[in-house]
Length: 261
Image (cartoon, rainbow, N blue to C red):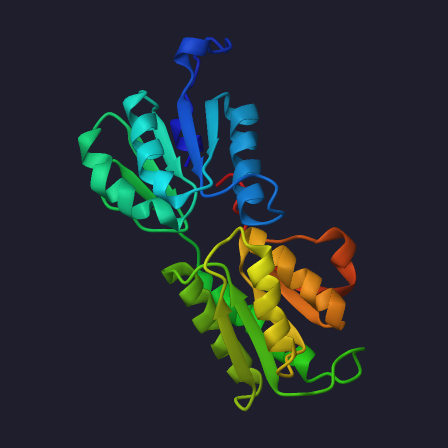
């Protein structure tokens, strides 16, 4: 997205501050989630360093403030306003036409407008691969803590189309290995609620689940904690590692959000 906004200097001189592309990135939460938002910010930081953009990152804790912050950045004359998650899609669709001189983008979602770009991923495919890995693990009794029970968990952050697509692909991947394996699904209702995520995960572990898939953002920390308590396993999404929970971390789905394309 950002590489297309880079200005060229025929004389090879450094751009002045006033000539820099101004980019506002709106986050549905805060940096430091160890997952999705950190990857988004990593990509934005690289763009600031490599492309010389003027970057402003806004961390928004309340969903009720998404729309007002989007409008504020557009009114402030930013060249590009990026909604950092699917939650911003509807507001971009609603307001983009009011600011024809501003470019808008949404990550992980869909928005409409002549001055809008939607950046999406093949969520179902990633979920499918994770499902295959989860099923293979759940059936491998040579792995410590695996008893062969045909039950696998899925705990998502929010019940939104992107995560529904991941869940659908995940279940298909599990079924491709063994259609008799049950997949227990739950949604936290937030990407920033590890307490509820831990409770949901414990409930699934108590029902015989040995591995949980967790596209849950910052809420995922609670899932790792539950797995560590029960000596079970977690398959992440947009997570490289979870530090002290390395022993329960089986694998992850990485989408390359931070990469320049």
